[in-house]
Image 1 (tube, rainbow, N blue to C red):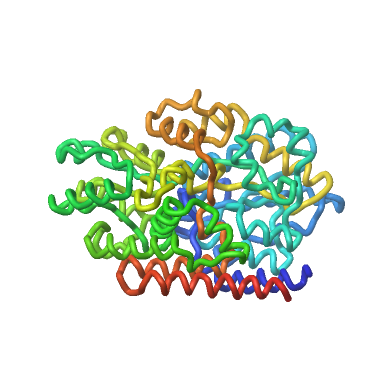
Image 2 (cartoon, rainbow, N blue to C red):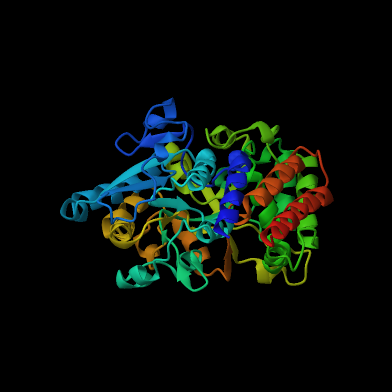
Length: 472
């Protein structure tokens, strides 16, 4: 079984080249050392050919090796400073006493999964690593590269610290396989309040109201949505948002486990809406060639040629870091409910995203696992939480709203608190091959080069092939 799974991981590594990770805060570069987190942006820092895996996780702490390797995607601030905080705190305290030292390697997000899978397939998996939970984490667990930490989690009192929604994302078959970190990251619409006020527009509550807003913006020669879709996951958010508001989560989960299909009505609806919106000019011109990682999409917002951006809530930190003055113009609302179905209101408070946005999992045992878990526990300390809030994050801990001062962050937090369910991003939840099929094909909707049915069929074909492979 394990040998077969390792082969699957190896194949996934080849296909992972096109995968990207949402909300990392990283822009460019491959790998950076914790002592110089900014180096990766100019090609500096650690080896960028994947050889920085040499300290990875075959040791269990019983052969005298006291180095704990830790991989994550925090290549640039604010994520780099946050991820480095726990490492420095542990090394200065418990590490200094026990002799264990955590060495951190940060890898740019769009290459991270590929490098991690290659490391696992070659037996060089790091002792600690971050992931997005979902389907990939299941594969890591089944391949033996993630250890349950339920007992350590309970002994540390973290069940009383972290939001239940965060812990549930890494709870599989009753066991906890990771520690939530960084941020409550859900999709929603940021918009320019001054443009809305000038055109007498209000926050839309329904899809039809959103379309009326977009039509007014187009009539006034303002692009409704700034969109950088060269990495495909930004466009995937629209597809996921529309499908969720149309049918909730049952159809997606049925398609995932094989009892349903990605050709269900909600997915065809999502594809057709995107095609219609693209035809009407709702998206920034040439959006499939526009990058979000280097901020090209945000320029349309700052130049006020676009009024809205549908993206992850991590942009509260991004916008405020870019310009506090401009950020004061921004409002936020959740993706509107679908008024084309009778029970659309029932699906309107479902969150798409992640309550955690990077979960630390562990590929070690014994004393080394204890030490690695101690390090990860520092992310829930008062100091770490204050640092995250200062950097514009919403840490996934209980009662975090009391610590927030940013009005938009508070609004987002309240929406999450009242959510009926949370669905992880499709491209992170789905198995790699299926996610690639979804991303590659759904991107073509925005350039009107495919049909909704073709996208649905391509994703379903990939899912069927994956499920058939699991039977062997």
